[in-house]
Length: 211
Ligand SMILES: N[C@@H](CCC(=O)N[C@@H](CS)C(=O)NCC(=O)O)C(=O)O
Image (cartoon, rainbow, N blue to C red; front, side, top):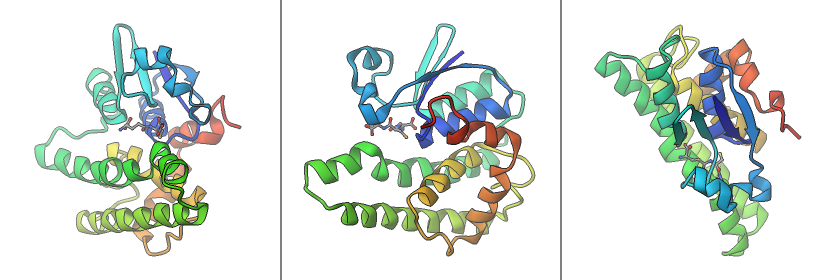
Protein backbone atom coordinates (compact mmCIF):
# COMPACT_ATOMS: atom_id res chain seq x y z
CA UNK A 1 0.00 0.00 0.00
CA UNK A 2 1.18 3.55 -0.79
CA UNK A 3 -0.01 6.80 0.76
CA UNK A 4 0.70 10.05 -1.05
CA UNK A 5 0.75 12.52 1.81
CA UNK A 6 2.04 15.84 3.09
CA UNK A 7 3.10 15.96 6.74
CA UNK A 8 1.05 19.06 7.58
CA UNK A 9 -2.02 18.12 5.56
CA UNK A 10 -4.90 17.44 7.94
CA UNK A 11 -6.69 15.25 5.40
CA UNK A 12 -3.56 13.10 5.00
CA UNK A 13 -3.29 13.03 8.79
CA UNK A 14 -6.85 11.60 8.98
CA UNK A 15 -5.85 8.66 6.80
CA UNK A 16 -2.53 8.15 8.61
CA UNK A 17 -4.47 7.82 11.89
CA UNK A 18 -6.80 5.24 10.34
CA UNK A 19 -3.86 3.25 8.91
CA UNK A 20 -2.07 3.33 12.27
CA UNK A 21 -5.18 2.31 14.23
CA UNK A 22 -5.56 -0.63 11.88
CA UNK A 23 -1.85 -1.40 12.12
CA UNK A 24 -1.46 -1.38 8.33
CA UNK A 25 2.02 -0.93 6.85
CA UNK A 26 2.41 1.42 3.90
CA UNK A 27 4.95 3.24 1.82
CA UNK A 28 4.94 7.01 2.44
CA UNK A 29 5.13 9.06 -0.76
CA UNK A 30 5.67 12.74 0.06
CA UNK A 31 3.84 15.39 -1.99
CA UNK A 32 4.93 18.91 -1.08
CA UNK A 33 1.79 21.02 -1.47
CA UNK A 34 3.74 24.17 -0.53
CA UNK A 35 5.74 23.60 -3.72
CA UNK A 36 2.49 22.86 -5.61
CA UNK A 37 3.56 19.28 -6.40
CA UNK A 38 -0.12 18.29 -6.19
CA UNK A 39 -0.71 20.39 -9.33
CA UNK A 40 1.86 18.50 -11.44
CA UNK A 41 0.25 16.80 -14.43
CA UNK A 42 1.68 13.45 -13.33
CA UNK A 43 0.04 13.73 -9.93
CA UNK A 44 -3.30 14.89 -11.36
CA UNK A 45 -3.24 11.76 -13.55
CA UNK A 46 -3.10 9.77 -10.31
CA UNK A 47 -5.58 11.93 -8.38
CA UNK A 48 -8.02 13.95 -10.50
CA UNK A 49 -8.95 16.02 -7.42
CA UNK A 50 -5.37 17.41 -7.36
CA UNK A 51 -4.94 17.19 -3.63
CA UNK A 52 -3.63 14.90 -0.91
CA UNK A 53 -4.12 12.27 0.35
CA UNK A 54 -4.09 9.59 -2.31
CA UNK A 55 -4.07 5.89 -1.43
CA UNK A 56 -2.90 3.07 -3.70
CA UNK A 57 -3.73 -0.45 -2.60
CA UNK A 58 -2.99 -2.91 -5.40
CA UNK A 59 -5.31 -1.99 -8.26
CA UNK A 60 -7.34 0.37 -6.07
CA UNK A 61 -6.40 4.05 -6.36
CA UNK A 62 -8.43 6.48 -4.25
CA UNK A 63 -8.50 10.15 -3.32
CA UNK A 64 -10.79 11.84 -0.75
CA UNK A 65 -9.83 11.01 2.81
CA UNK A 66 -13.29 9.92 3.95
CA UNK A 67 -13.70 7.60 0.96
CA UNK A 68 -10.23 6.19 1.67
CA UNK A 69 -11.04 5.53 5.34
CA UNK A 70 -14.38 3.99 4.37
CA UNK A 71 -12.52 1.68 1.94
CA UNK A 72 -9.93 0.76 4.59
CA UNK A 73 -12.66 0.06 7.13
CA UNK A 74 -14.54 -2.23 4.76
CA UNK A 75 -11.39 -3.99 3.50
CA UNK A 76 -9.42 -4.26 6.75
CA UNK A 77 -12.10 -4.53 9.43
CA UNK A 78 -9.76 -4.82 12.41
CA UNK A 79 -10.45 -1.80 14.69
CA UNK A 80 -13.72 -0.69 13.07
CA UNK A 81 -13.84 3.08 12.68
CA UNK A 82 -17.35 3.37 11.23
CA UNK A 83 -20.00 1.56 13.30
CA UNK A 84 -22.33 -0.93 11.61
CA UNK A 85 -25.43 0.17 13.55
CA UNK A 86 -27.33 2.69 11.40
CA UNK A 87 -27.91 5.34 14.07
CA UNK A 88 -24.38 5.10 15.50
CA UNK A 89 -22.89 5.19 12.01
CA UNK A 90 -24.90 8.30 11.15
CA UNK A 91 -23.82 10.04 14.37
CA UNK A 92 -20.16 9.32 13.68
CA UNK A 93 -20.59 10.59 10.11
CA UNK A 94 -22.46 13.68 11.36
CA UNK A 95 -19.52 14.72 13.53
CA UNK A 96 -16.97 13.76 10.86
CA UNK A 97 -18.78 15.84 8.22
CA UNK A 98 -19.01 18.81 10.62
CA UNK A 99 -15.21 18.87 10.38
CA UNK A 100 -14.62 17.56 6.87
CA UNK A 101 -17.43 19.38 5.02
CA UNK A 102 -18.03 22.50 7.12
CA UNK A 103 -14.63 23.50 8.54
CA UNK A 104 -11.83 22.11 6.38
CA UNK A 105 -12.94 23.25 2.88
CA UNK A 106 -13.17 26.97 3.70
CA UNK A 107 -9.73 26.99 5.35
CA UNK A 108 -7.95 24.83 2.79
CA UNK A 109 -4.63 25.98 1.33
CA UNK A 110 -6.07 26.91 -2.08
CA UNK A 111 -8.78 29.06 -0.46
CA UNK A 112 -6.28 30.92 1.75
CA UNK A 113 -3.96 31.36 -1.24
CA UNK A 114 -6.84 32.74 -3.34
CA UNK A 115 -7.80 35.21 -0.61
CA UNK A 116 -4.24 36.56 -0.45
CA UNK A 117 -3.01 36.27 -4.03
CA UNK A 118 -6.16 36.98 -6.07
CA UNK A 119 -8.29 39.10 -3.74
CA UNK A 120 -5.41 40.97 -2.12
CA UNK A 121 -6.48 40.15 1.44
CA UNK A 122 -3.85 40.95 4.12
CA UNK A 123 -2.25 38.24 6.25
CA UNK A 124 -4.13 39.58 9.29
CA UNK A 125 -7.48 39.38 7.49
CA UNK A 126 -6.66 35.88 6.27
CA UNK A 127 -5.91 34.78 9.84
CA UNK A 128 -9.19 36.37 11.01
CA UNK A 129 -11.02 34.39 8.32
CA UNK A 130 -9.29 31.19 9.46
CA UNK A 131 -10.06 31.74 13.16
CA UNK A 132 -13.68 32.67 12.40
CA UNK A 133 -14.48 29.41 10.60
CA UNK A 134 -12.61 27.39 13.22
CA UNK A 135 -14.68 29.01 15.99
CA UNK A 136 -18.00 28.52 14.15
CA UNK A 137 -17.17 24.97 13.17
CA UNK A 138 -15.77 23.79 16.49
CA UNK A 139 -18.76 25.34 18.32
CA UNK A 140 -20.93 22.92 16.34
CA UNK A 141 -18.59 20.01 17.10
CA UNK A 142 -18.65 20.94 20.80
CA UNK A 143 -22.49 20.89 20.78
CA UNK A 144 -22.47 17.50 19.06
CA UNK A 145 -20.07 16.11 21.65
CA UNK A 146 -22.33 17.50 24.42
CA UNK A 147 -25.38 15.87 22.86
CA UNK A 148 -23.82 12.46 22.45
CA UNK A 149 -21.92 12.42 25.74
CA UNK A 150 -18.30 12.01 24.84
CA UNK A 151 -16.08 9.41 26.49
CA UNK A 152 -12.37 9.81 26.25
CA UNK A 153 -12.92 9.61 22.47
CA UNK A 154 -15.66 11.42 20.53
CA UNK A 155 -17.91 8.38 20.91
CA UNK A 156 -17.10 6.45 24.05
CA UNK A 157 -14.09 4.27 24.75
CA UNK A 158 -12.89 3.51 21.23
CA UNK A 159 -11.66 5.67 18.36
CA UNK A 160 -13.84 6.23 15.32
CA UNK A 161 -13.73 8.15 12.06
CA UNK A 162 -14.86 11.18 14.07
CA UNK A 163 -11.55 11.19 15.98
CA UNK A 164 -9.61 10.74 12.73
CA UNK A 165 -11.23 14.01 11.59
CA UNK A 166 -11.28 15.96 14.85
CA UNK A 167 -7.65 15.51 15.91
CA UNK A 168 -5.99 16.88 12.73
CA UNK A 169 -8.41 19.82 12.61
CA UNK A 170 -7.67 20.76 16.22
CA UNK A 171 -3.92 20.32 15.61
CA UNK A 172 -4.17 22.77 12.69
CA UNK A 173 -6.18 25.25 14.76
CA UNK A 174 -3.58 25.14 17.54
CA UNK A 175 -0.79 25.55 14.99
CA UNK A 176 -2.60 28.64 13.72
CA UNK A 177 -2.83 29.88 17.34
CA UNK A 178 -6.66 29.88 17.49
CA UNK A 179 -8.17 30.30 20.96
CA UNK A 180 -9.97 27.01 21.71
CA UNK A 181 -10.83 27.60 25.38
CA UNK A 182 -14.54 27.77 24.54
CA UNK A 183 -14.45 24.13 23.41
CA UNK A 184 -13.51 22.04 26.47
CA UNK A 185 -14.94 18.76 25.17
CA UNK A 186 -13.20 19.13 21.84
CA UNK A 187 -9.92 19.81 23.64
CA UNK A 188 -10.39 16.92 26.07
CA UNK A 189 -10.91 14.46 23.19
CA UNK A 190 -7.88 15.94 21.41
CA UNK A 191 -5.66 15.70 24.50
CA UNK A 192 -6.71 12.09 25.08
CA UNK A 193 -6.08 11.07 21.47
CA UNK A 194 -2.79 12.85 20.89
CA UNK A 195 -0.94 10.64 23.39
CA UNK A 196 -2.25 7.33 22.03
CA UNK A 197 0.41 5.43 20.03
CA UNK A 198 -1.50 5.34 16.72
CA UNK A 199 -2.22 9.06 16.85
CA UNK A 200 1.41 9.79 17.77
CA UNK A 201 2.65 7.71 14.84
CA UNK A 202 0.35 9.66 12.50
CA UNK A 203 1.30 13.13 13.77
CA UNK A 204 2.97 15.59 11.38
CA UNK A 205 6.24 15.61 13.37
CA UNK A 206 6.57 11.82 12.99
CA UNK A 207 6.43 11.87 9.17
CA UNK A 208 9.48 11.44 6.92
CA UNK A 209 8.80 14.76 5.11
CA UNK A 210 8.41 16.76 8.33
CA UNK A 211 10.39 19.97 8.01
N1 LIG B 1 -11.94 16.61 0.52
C1 LIG B 1 -10.57 16.23 0.34
C2 LIG B 1 -9.70 17.44 0.55
C3 LIG B 1 -8.24 17.15 0.25
C4 LIG B 1 -7.41 18.43 0.31
O1 LIG B 1 -7.84 19.47 -0.16
N2 LIG B 1 -6.22 18.31 0.90
C5 LIG B 1 -5.41 19.49 1.08
C6 LIG B 1 -4.38 19.30 2.15
S1 LIG B 1 -5.14 19.14 3.75
C7 LIG B 1 -4.70 19.82 -0.21
O2 LIG B 1 -4.18 18.96 -0.90
N3 LIG B 1 -4.71 21.12 -0.53
C8 LIG B 1 -4.07 21.59 -1.70
C9 LIG B 1 -4.69 22.89 -2.14
O3 LIG B 1 -5.55 23.41 -1.44
O4 LIG B 1 -4.27 23.37 -3.19
C10 LIG B 1 -10.21 15.08 1.27
O5 LIG B 1 -10.87 14.92 2.30
O6 LIG B 1 -9.29 14.31 0.97
